[in-house]
Structure formats: structure tokens, C-alpha cells
Length: 114
Image (cartoon, rainbow, N blue to C red; front, side, top):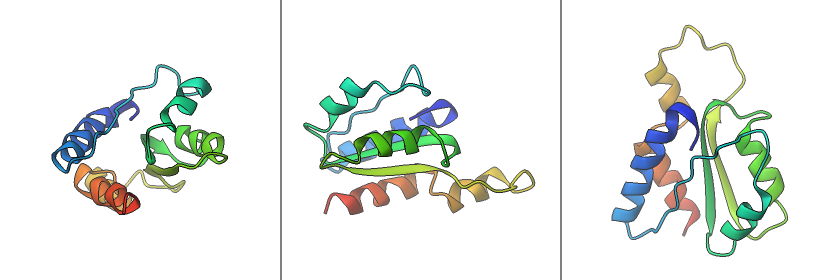
């Protein structure tokens, strides 16, 4: 989970734990360069890797992670915004539109674990 949405990641991890899912929450130090060895280690014991960012998905951190992990047997789910003009849209509406609330993220993640 990146930036301003790290706190959302904390809430998601807590709710997943309440559902018996042992989630790993990571706040990457760098978003331009991937820690490939770390990601390779994650796929050894994770079925789903979700990225949460408060920016645009196109060309963002989550897309980089998904691209790198494409050759591995792991599902990747990216949460973030689409590229659009949304400066006049209330943040709460954007969060709902892009499933950027813990209440919307958790079901999306759980659906991939079935």
C-alpha cells in the first residue's frame, strides 16, 4: 500500500485477518524500482498480491508489479484510479468508483481466493 492509502491497507489486512487470511502488508520504500528478489519471495507463500495506490494505475506501481509477476503463479489485483479528469469529483465518490475503501477492497481480494 502506497502513500495516503497505506492506512487503508492496514484496515484491509486487519479485516482479512478476521477472516482467517494471513495478509502481509508492505509499504515500499521505493516505487520506481521494484525489489524483484522480495517479490519473488512473496510468490512462494502468497496466492494473491494486491497493490493499493492513491494515483493512476496506468504506468503506476501496481502495473509494474503485475508486469513483473506475470510469469509467476500468483494473482495480482491493482487498486488505483483510471486516467481521467476528476478534479471536480468528490474524493468519496472516487474511492467508491475505484474500490479504494477497505469495505470494497476486501470482497475483491476474497473473491480471488476462492
